Amino acid sequence: MIRIQEHLNRDDAEVFLDTLAEKHWGTLNQNLASGKGLKQNSLIEKCRKYKAQTKRKSYIVKYAGGDPQAAERQKTFFDFLLSAKATNLKRLIIARPLEFSSLKAEIYGILHPSDLYSGSPGNCAQSPFGVLLSNVIFNYTAFRASDFCKDLFSEINFQSTTCPYCNDNKLNITKLKSNSSSKTKLKAYLDLDHFYSKSEHPYFSISFFNLLPVCHDCNSGDKGEKPFTIETHIHPYCDSFDDYYKFSISLTTLLGDPIDSIDIHKTNRRPHDITLTDLNLRARYANNFAAANELVNLFWKNKEHIGTEFENDFRELLLRDIPVERHNILKHQRAKMNRDILMQIDIGNVLNLL
Image (cartoon, rainbow, N blue to C red; front, top):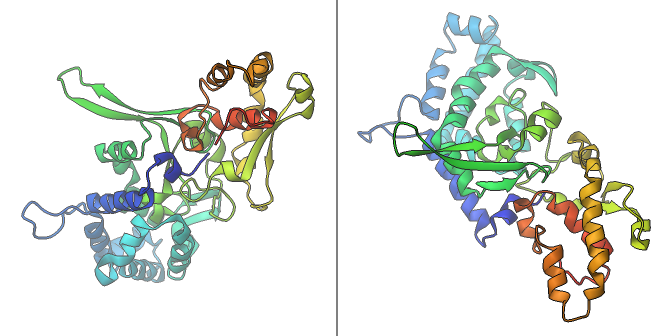
């Protein structure tokens, strides 16, 4: 619910992420041991291989539905990716989210949507060429199973955190020992969400900034294939949910009444944003009455210590599992909700939440 850059809590977060994206590109395009050329399974070599096949009848039948014009568009697409020493291919892998719209426009200036999928956005089936891109060339399955994938998201500080979409479910990257040796391997207990869906945008299947470490409930349960865009949804590398939405409780709580509702209000700064709706966050957080009431009751029962020698004890009691500093929100479940509630009832800002 905050930007991943803020979660990293380092002055060079932007440069650091770009460095990781470059590392990702390098891993996808490894050199031969001799240093002369690239490995056959490198991204560039796979694009070259299938570009060379686009004139073959077998390719036209299998990937272009028997349509030579569709196959010609696909060849032009490969030309686009490979031109100028694969500059555009690299752009696909390392581009920042704000560049995705322009990349999409360039690609759809070459390909027709029907070249990639049938149906409508959010309810589409990949074409054979779309499957070729997502499953073979931009092979997400192989990347997701690789050790490099786990190492990459460990470096982004997701070893033990919460989902940046909901801040409710835990994510972990854990070292597991092999039964047959003393070696350890990383296992990622998290999903990787394709912000721009893989079925509609297979060319973004392994784009660094299109892969978001999130929980299964958000990824498969609520987001699914819904068409997310930078303009309509909060992207955790671009924006913080915390800047645009606030949890709130009824004002009668300030008079000592128990919480009877938990709401999430949107500010006017992103009027067209539908993140809240598409992730069903209001409904999901509505079940947290007990925890919210416990927090509020703890505040009221101990607020008499404000202004006394026990004020620091009061702060420590309230903030046992709630971060004072915003950059730690993702380290604690429901920290965003708890901080917002405390900010609402702590009128004097005794807790100094930042």
